[in-house]
Image (cartoon, rainbow, N blue to C red; front, side):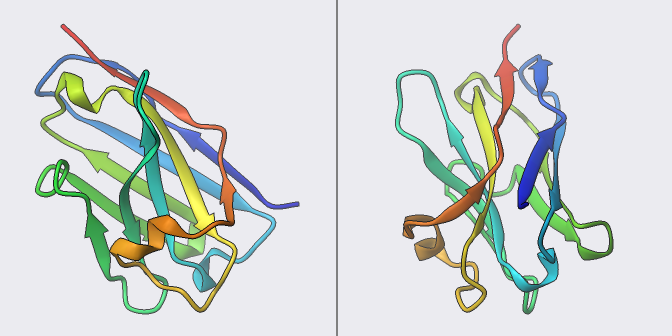
Length: 128
């Protein structure tokens, strides 16, 4: 059974950092591009970042570029999202996702496919 489990969320003050982890099981992460979405209160879910399986290519939405870093450890079947310089606008539930296809790698279009494996989400609250 495929599972994605996020961890590392919590309450953090503006300007501080958090690292989210996503542990994958039931499939071999090596073959899949994987990414992070988030959904803020009252807003639609948006793509945040993704990373390819083939060459490690990464993509970030403009609002997090330069502050967030995505990485993967295929040996551990894990993906990480390092979030620095957090601000209140980053408050959201963050979801780890893997597209149910191995032929599609990370790109701005990666976030607009229809079928993903999803984690249950990790709440990140940025507040003083």
